[in-house]
Length: 213
Image (cartoon, rainbow, N blue to C red; front, side, top):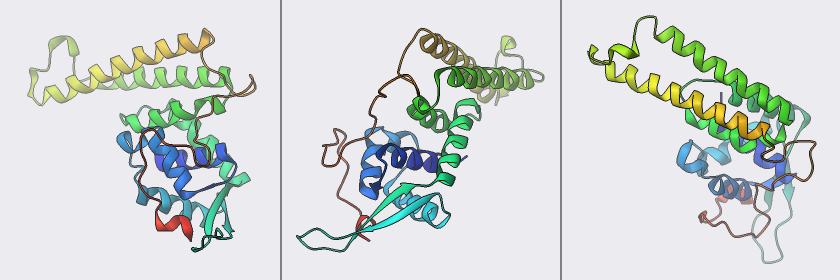
C-alpha cells in the first residue's frame, strides 16, 4: 500500500483545506520523514497526482498583497475520503514487515471508532501469528539460526521481530480497551496537525515552489 498517500490524505482531511507546505510541515511534525518515504518531493508529487485522480480538489488561492504567484490549497473529496479509510484500515491489519505502514496507521487511527480499531489490531495479531506459522514450517526458532548457517540469522531476526510486534500489539490493544486516547465519536479529538503559522518544533525547511503554483 502507499504510505505517502495515506499520510497526505490524512493531513489534508484534518485541516479541511491545506497547501503543500502545511502538509509537509505536519508530516515532519509526525516524524514521517524519518520512518517513511515522506520527503518534500514525494509529498508535492502525491498532492498533484491525487488531485488529477479526483481524490483531492485543488483550489487556486489569490497571492498575498506582498506579491508572488498564487498558492494551491487542497481539499479531500468523497472519493478521497473513501480511499483514505481503505488505506487506514489496511495499515492497521497488514503485517508486511514494513514499519512505515503501521506507523502511519497508528498516527491516524483515532479517525476510526474504538471498537473498530480494536478489531483491526486483533486482525493484525492474527496475521502475525499466521506468518510465523508459515515460517516455522521450515525454520525452528528453538534450534537456533545455526541450522541454516549464517543465513539463519535473517530468519532469526524476522521471527524475533514478529514475536515482538505481536506482543507490542497486544499491549496496545489492552491500553485502548482501558480507555486510552479519544477515538471518532467520543468527543474532541487530539489535534495532530499544526495551525497556520504555528511553529514546527522539528523545523521544516523553506516552502517548496509547488506551494505557490
